[in-house]
Image (cartoon, rainbow, N blue to C red; front, side):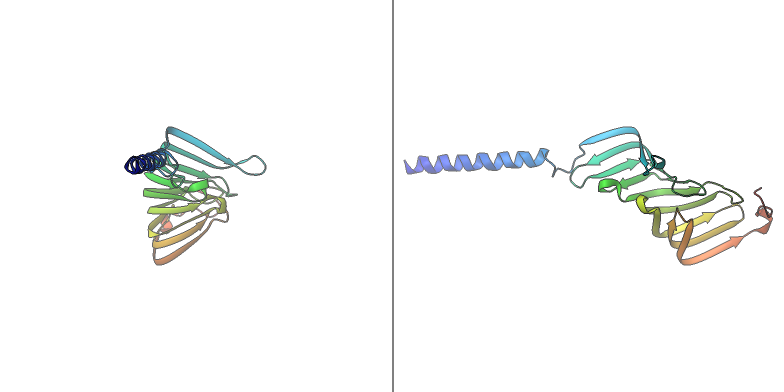
Amino acid sequence: MVLLAILAALTFWLDRVIESGARDIVGPSRSDPDYIVQNISARTLDETGKTRHTLNAAKMVHYPDDDSTLLTQPKLVSYGAVQAPVTITANQGVVSSKGEHVYFQDNVRVARAPYENQSELIMRTSFLHVIPNENLAKTDRHVTIINDATVVTAVGLELNTESQELKLLSNVQSTYDPTKAPPRGGRR
């Protein structure tokens, strides 16, 4: 009788262990994606209803274990700048939980549209950390920045897209070609 009671208790215990393990596999602690979306487009609005950011991607894969999102061919456009929008593209991107951080990697290109007498500004790097709500972008990697007449290379930068302030962190080198500069008072 005691042997049957022990066997029944062991069976009950094994059943509980197996059921709780099965719940973990399909529950929020799993590491496989819970949804995949092709050709996604999202928009963030400010308090007045004006578009603050747009985010497009060829593919989006969401992971519930850390609420992160993997993007293929992401394109983020920030309209926070008073002068001109800033567009960031890359081969891949990762969006953190709640979208507070976006990490662009592989063939990252940042383009500030031309405005007034300023030419288009292009920046290239291999990795860029963007904090959209603060209008900040930063990297600790090699960067190349190009406009009509200037090529600048550096290691590391911090960019505020709202104020258009760009801080280069180290190993800064620059080349300026006055023959390619726009005439004073206007763009070429």
